[in-house]
Picture: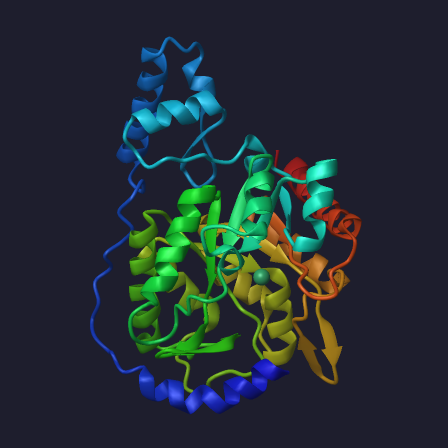
Length: 369
Ligand SMILES: [Fe+2]
């Protein structure tokens, strides 16, 4: 509910800030996007391994569904460094498995995870919680990263705010990406900053051409800064802008076309928005570009009167599981994360939810093959 109140208070202010209409040609995302570049990178890695006398070089190089080359073991990582390319201590094959599910990594579970090494495909963290050069959270993150693939999920970059991105934030994020070499990096399609003032919330955007310019410029800047593709996530919302000229899904599709970013589809957010804002989730899914879906989020919500609140504090609702199956039908099996941020339960509960998602993914995979 707080999102709705804060958003309502800030809407007119934000509208006054978005004033940069111009025809903007897509700059595109320059790194590793062209097939020729993929092949060249693969070639260089294989040659590097072969030069060192390593057998079965091809088995050490894989491509995941993003088209990125991934390297399986430590010796290959070493070889990769020798090519002079950016280091990619990349995910194990678990991340690319057809039933690859992950859970949000939260401090109460650090020690249990290290002790028991539970069967889960990967972990995701909020990037901002690990900014800085040391401290206990980073210590645990690096130890867990040694055993599992990792995804970085940002909550504070405010891609939809006008003005330049926060350079300090970008620098911290770049340092963290270099340090933990995540499989995926994502941010929200939202705004939450006005100049130096940060609002502790993810606020919805008006879906207009002006907002599209702002968001695309910032995604270009972020991707160029990190030298990698990022994913943008659809947020939950409790208000909409009357003067939006595009449906949200079409807005996202245009962002993808112009920046070559990927999509993190939050199925719970879509369901919540469907109820709160009278959006048809099926029409929404059909409007998203299939090839751009790189990750899915699932989470719990609560009902307050006629509103659904995206609390991330309960199990995934049956109706959201149903919508998830519909999303798998359209997009195929996509790495899926269970998000849980309030009233954090025992690790076993998260693993049960993750296991259920994996079962649904396997069923979808079996149908398709
Ligand atoms: Fe999410």
